[in-house]
Length: 389
Image (tube, rainbow, N blue to C red):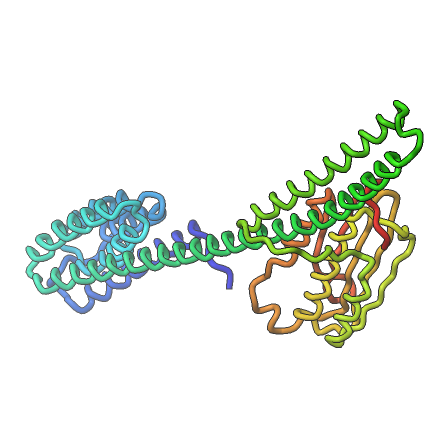
């Protein structure tokens, strides 16, 4: 059922308050006989004037209470059936507690209502009814406070849960960035180590030549020695930066996995009873190391999600290179496990998206046409740092 919007709900509440007041007035007139003044057109108009301010109760709760009170006072002084004013007064008291921005004016408004209604009704010869009416007003007022406190509590709990989730996302993203930094270190360290060895060997060979005193050879040897020293120093700096990211407790890392090891992911999925079909059309034999590592991690996380969250027994991994972009698609044929739809979303997609964006790519994930889930990524392929696929 769709909840009524506040303006519509307020119209219905004001109309209901007016109608209930009329019913109470005529009922009391029939019961009380000659004890109270008969209900006439003035009484009906005053009851309508008491209900009309309720249309603006959410916007101006305290003025609405005072307006209802101002109209009810002449109604009581004219000695019409007193209890007929209670529907409008109860709604006004509830509204003052529920929607007032500060509680102090709401308490003041309630005291004003009681201070006016109690002596007026008591003067009519029914002090017991006056006290009963004030009791009903207090109940309505504290009911409004209870609803207000409950809504504030729910909002505070929702905000705290959202903050905790935001903090968890930030923590996971930070951990993912450290992992990406470690993998980037491995890629760069491998390339720099190769460059260091090759430069050192080349410089050594030049130094052994009979013509090593020639100026061009001496200049080339010095350049190679400088390259070797620079690459060695850069390796040490990379390790120092990685140590900082790990809080000074970094352990030696294994070489980063890349697309050349895709078969191990296929075997991992098949061990979990999920058959993986790999389609690699138009894929070059070499890819930049960073792109290869990111692609591997995206496929790894996607297949892990298939195993954990899908009932599919088959998944498809598509790889194709279109110009200078590597396109990846991991598709399962679902549907999702029932328990998976009842739990909050994890952080795998956020991590994959961060990896793709780190190399200038993009990633999307969502329901696929086959009824399962599909992860698609597009990664740029620059012309440097190529490794075999």
